[in-house]
Image (cartoon, rainbow, N blue to C red; front, top):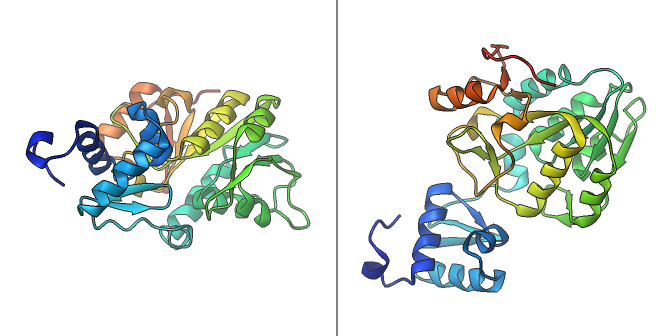
Length: 270
């Protein structure tokens, strides 16, 4: 990615800042970038087109990444880290007590958890994840409510005010939340503002929030913070994070459960 100043590159200051931001974070959605810079989505789309035409960015549906980047689609994500996600799912189920009402987030890790939940008829599941819901549409599966909303992308997620309002009216025991990366404070982050709004609403509606992420997320930072690290009782993952992230999670009081079930030196909350 370019490291020269805006004047040297001939870019407008906002375009230069946008280029640097996407380079640092790996991807940016149109909506998230518009909020970050305080401009309209149409303005951001024009900036992305201009930067793509100069070979400085790669335009994707709904956003952009660094030039030459390949953003994985849902099908590709589903086959990556498959064993890791299965281990995460098995551990995540141990964080869900009998009789619990739970929110299950979107993404391939959440789908693995849904598959593992299919025999847990002792819980109730609320989700905006249509693909996870299909995994639970079988005899013996837990009672299921799919939250309303608009379909967003190939991962079968539902977003929008209808789903947020539905969550606001619920009293949940556990919110199972996925993410795309972490910032320096240990807070999980993601790319899509509308999906983030659902995650935040679920955290607010639940007595306890469980964060699920495979270890490939540890070296990434997405565009927008979901919630402070301390909003989560536990991180369930396949391998322990590195020193900086581990220290941040410990400082925030977040417990850790990983494939080897190595507990973090912090009390469980909730």
